[in-house]
Image (cartoon, rainbow, N blue to C red; front, side):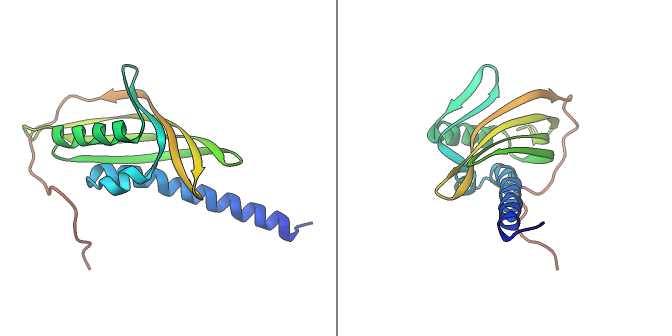
Length: 158
């Protein structure tokens, strides 16, 4: 028998799932559109971002500086995440998603790469945040030929 309490729990789970999917998208949008406020908002203040076994950024200031270094290195970045799965445990959760990344080098050539993100999430002040993100199974493809393109997407056509 379905009760009000069981429906409320199911709705809470659906809302949490949607919030975490949005969080993963905000990570990509913040990075790709150089939106430091959005980028910062996805992390806990004590977060860890492990981009490779020898590159680990601890704390929001270190993470913020790391993404700004990426912005200086790559004129354009484009992330796309898929296959996001989440396991909940109360006010924490673990997730994994696959990512494909296109980055433009300073000489305008492009590199395609990707891998998977392994995440730990935590509720802070009523909102889900990334407490830990590790890149696993990273790959890069050889640079592609130079190409011109828009530096940013600002308008959505009618």
